[in-house]
Amino acid sequence: MSVDPKKAATTGQEKMLTSPEQQALINEVRRLIGPQSGKASIFCSDACISRYLRARNWNVKKAAKMLKVTLKWREEYKPEEIRWEDVAHEAETGKIYRSNYIDKHGRTVLVMRPSRQMVKPILETKTYNKVKFAYSDDQNTKKIMEDLFDFDQLESAFGGNDDTGFDINKYADRMKEDDKKIPAFWTTGNTPSSVPTHVPSLDSSRLDSNTGDGSDNEKLDSFPDLVVDTGIINPNQ
Image: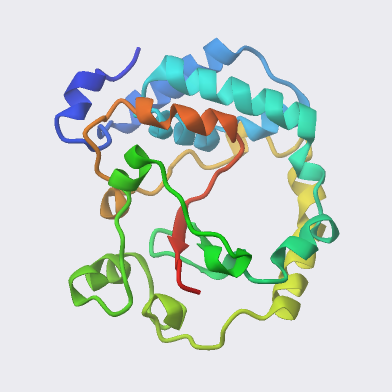
């Protein structure tokens, strides 16, 4: 069972499904990837699988293929074992970090500032055409940010009211606290059924495209465990 990509492509937006329909597709992906055990079983929650389905516009076969690549990658590289000390040197410049706020949909926000690594941000054409660009001094695009963020929490670099800036020491403390929580997550008691299946709608930030089947995202399979809810990029800082 899969959503007809041709129908979805007419609007370039995600096909809206009812909860029973979503659950049926989730169950079918589970059947295709086969039984999982240990950490893989915990990772493959209904919420997780629904995200892979969304990434492939509810195409079950493509979602299952993408998820299988992720599971293989996770088994080889064991990202759940990475701790702050392993990556601290990469965060010192503030080129990329997880914000201390979430968007209005409750999603994690990843901030990227490519110029702090002396490189220019590069997006391949199809991805570029799907991104909604917003600039702090552009009133025409300000609404995009207002729809997604609380301006009292949003950094001034992105048009918000928070001008405290990136503090590596405070960020390090947050990451160390997160490290302490990781073991508790990867326990057998944290089964897929215990994870909420509802994922907030992405309508307000849906990235429009003329290829609604998600086929243009196939390159993401090269980075199968890159899962970001909301990303904001400031190429000038």
